[in-house]
Structures are given as structure tokens and as C-alpha cells.
Image (cartoon, rainbow, N blue to C red):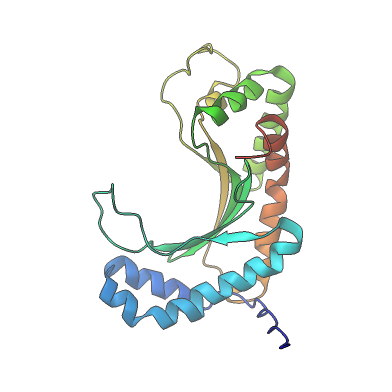
Length: 219
């Protein structure tokens, strides 16, 4: 029986990862991709897999998103995504996210609602005083750590809630994610990137714990 090869050690994203996506933004075509696929494999995919492998013991197995765009229902027919993303915790209500693009590194987490079945218990927990105030404290802490809030929202007041609700801004969310954009610091091409992503995911853990308790464990 042959011995499996050890997983590569993560040592950062080389500058070629960012320049790959900068060029892809200008020439997003199948011909260009095929001519530069070796760069994608070496500078993007392999380092990302090594990063996820290094984080697996603490955060679980991760899903690497495919580079192709789903253009079936989009007016934009460019065939490839201009970033490489990955998700740990896929298949649950909460997840941890990491991405590399021409802009650099992004990390965060939260939950994406795939329908009202998840939005309803989320809003009910935001509305309830104890759980709602607990979430606001978590979000305030994340903002202090340079995380931004994302997620689809309604523009007006959600049905069934008062316009002057003390947590109306959070109630407008159908889903809730937070991300920290690191840009492209010099340490991106070093092993420090692993530490930064790990610390970001640890910072998101209280939000994900709240989501698991109040929205549900399974997506």
C-alpha cells in the first residue's frame, strides 16, 4: 500500500495570485483562462487548499468554490469569477469564508438565507429582547474589529415589526454576514496569512454560535 503524500504547507499567496485576477478582470475569456490555468493552479488553488487544510482541525472541512460563473440567468456572460472563495461549515446555518482576488484577502462568516424558513427564526431572535441584545453586542464587537456587515435586506420595515423597533436595522436583514477586508499587505505572501485568517474566523465564532442557537444548526 502506497503512503499518501503529505499536504503542502501553507506559506502565503504569492503575488502571482493577485496579478492573475487583475488580468482576468481585463480579459475574462476561456482562451485566456486556458493559457494561464497553470498560474491559477500554482498561485491560487494550491495555496488556498493548503490554507484550508491548515484550518480544518479547528473549523472543519471546507468547500473550495469552482472558478466558473453560472451565467444561465445573468446578463454578464463572462465565464470566470474574479476571485477564489472557500467556505468552511458548508451545509450548516453558519459558515466561515475566505477569499483572494486582485484586491487582496477577505475573511469573515455568518449565514446566507436560502429562503424565508431561515429568515423568520432569525428575525424572531433579533426581536426578542435577550437574544436580540446579545446579537447587537456581538455585532458591535465585530465592527470594532473592522468587520463590515453584509447580507440581503429589505428597504422598508419587515412585515410584522414596528418601524421604530430598537433593532430595526438588523431586522431588515434577510441574512447576515460579516467580512474583514485586509487588502494586499506585504505579509499576504507569507505564512502570517494563516494567522490572520484564523484570528478573523475566531472573531466571527460568537456570531456563528448565536446563529446556531437561534436560527438552527442545519441550513
